[in-house]
Image 1 (cartoon, rainbow, N blue to C red):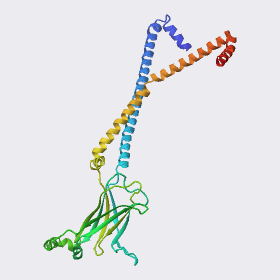
Image 2: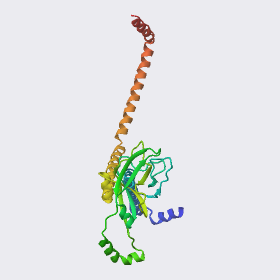
Image 3: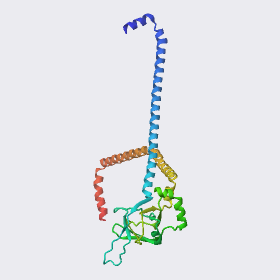
Image 4: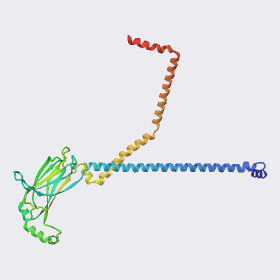
Length: 328
């Protein structure tokens, strides 16, 4: 530093160049550098704030959308029951004891719907259908009409509902049977088609489950011992009406409307919450009121202490006066 100062003194003894050239240039350069640094820090801070705000908005929007979807799915699966329940029916000839005078050896079956749990939704009407797969034999044709009865019971084997319906094979004339046999002969020969019919017996058209006695079992009885069957199947179908009908038949439209509605209300709550917490005036008001209360209490205490200091005997006399007033 001494050598540099000596050189400067030799080259610029009167400090003209240093005061009027180097110093202004250095000052201007430092000012420009500081200004650039400040702008850079401000731009970085602004970019960081914008990025953070954008990240918060994206996270909040993502959360709100998924909350709307979750609420609709929860409502859908809690409000919509199962559309179809299918149970296989294994019919068997009931054995009658010798002393049972009212017992008749009919094909019967006990179908367990559930194991001591609720199977159907309360308040939702159901249609209970029995599908019988019957061969188109001469024997079944001679039987004609037959009766099918269904008895719904709860877990305590208490009868809840009972229904009996009549049915039969669809009639086909001999000429029609011959024509169908010739037409479908290749399929019949190779086993792709069989001479059978699916007879549908609607036992209950509008069954409503009871909350006190939920349906857990159904007893099926066919009042015809000589009937011929391949298989039997029980179907419990929900009859949707109103909002459930719309949600089942138009699921995409219902989902859009439900999610949009949830999104609208959640956004309203979020916006109101944002304005409520963003506005800090109410916090300042509470703080000011608290300070005023504290100052008022302190002033009252100071005034009472001054009063006690000035008139120490006045406070001692007040109880006696109050006592005399009470006595009077």
